[in-house]
Image 1 (cartoon, chains in turn green, purple):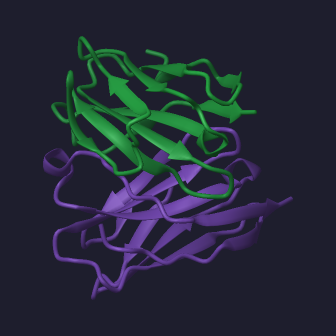
Image 2 (cartoon, chains in turn orange, purple; image 1 turned 180 degrees about the vertical axis):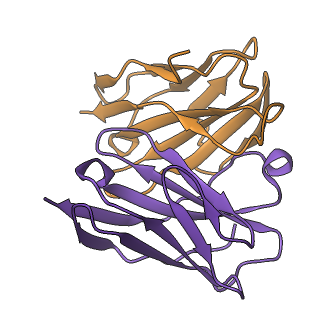
Length: 116
Length: 114
């Protein structure tokens, strides 16, 4: 198992375009989280899934953002009509609450989005 | 989640111990104290967590004050690879029940000098 994988690692897009990011969690991890991190700040929670169910969404997740985890495995985060303020690192994390202590969240390396 | 306060930055010499303080004066009885660190150009990684008792693992030690209003992460012998931003996070409830939604603050940037 190679850990949490995120693609692409970098994305440059023009304002107004739609973008989609993919996250492949650690195999059989039932929880998957999305965070956003701007330069010099800590990550901010966006949303999380328990299997395929989206259980919580932050108020940071405007209606231009949508996340899915259709089969309880990989997840996608789509941003429609991107704005310059969407430029950030988007981090995915997964955890397994059915094994061990379920304490750790394992993070991917992130997708860096630049909106020009 | 309750708020934590950490110094913005700290410097250490290589192979010396590093003590990273965290204040959490509004901690509740069910809040667990978690530490994560973020190396340059990486996602955060789990370091350690605790509730009341001091904890040790291969990465670090966590010393928790008796009143739980503060804690200290201890890196026993800093290496250049330990240069990172360290986040102290409070999370309500036992890990399995609460899941792993984490509320990050600004963290402490640790610089390790050779």
